Length: 311
Image (cartoon, rainbow, N blue to C red; front, side, top):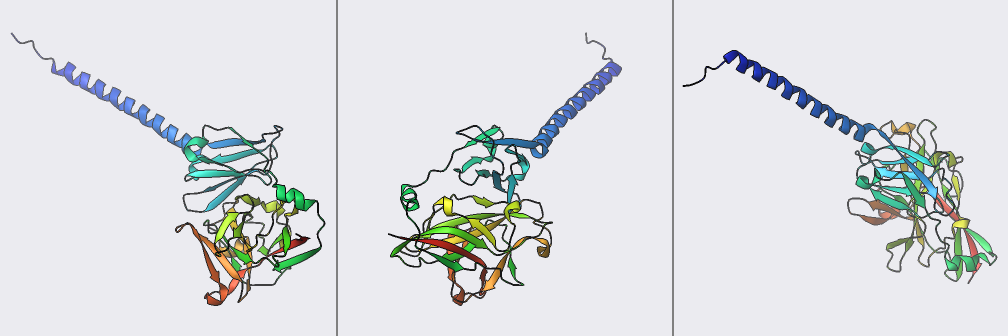
């Protein structure tokens, strides 16, 4: 004998169950959305510390490439703290400070780190030996005075551009004293400048970095045109086959999408003999060109001064 079915109770149970499931799904979605929001839009903090003495390192720089392929930089405050949004970062980051060894982290590891310790970069034995000698002269190469120009160059896309300088005389030792960068500085759109100095080998290939790969000039250090960068204490010696002096802009003010006329930019000058080089991120190699064979005879207004020593 079958039991009578109470249709009303059955419908009521289904309605109640549907409401419970709906509320449950809403709660799950809310938790997921909150987690995504916190992950994407919450501001993270890193503290940068000198490993030897435990003191904070103001002006340390976090460098990364964002979703638009723009090279970005975030600078530490006076307490050595860097604030950033994790969603701005594509893959990995570099932390750099002048005179210290660089460190790098993958994006997935960054959230598990609150404090980063940097170690002082060692000075080579050759540098100590030469430092004991007195220079016998000076050499200036490239553009080292202010120049007037109406042409400028911007590169935020991880495409280092620069000039190759030959060794003036291989019978002597040359130590890089100063670097010069012709610049148009815009207060509304300040930028940091990343510098790479690389050696040239006997086959005319761009070889090893002569200075830390992420050497950074901060916006507040850009006080003159040309910018003068003191490098004597960095103990960088000119290789026998010369070196490449290259630069790259870093957007620190979120103005990479602004009109080009409102941005800090490198000055360019006309030159028909200087060798230039550009780094190609897609090919992952340096491309060397002579301005006489290029459609564009404009090169960056870069220069350097060297201290000369007897061998």
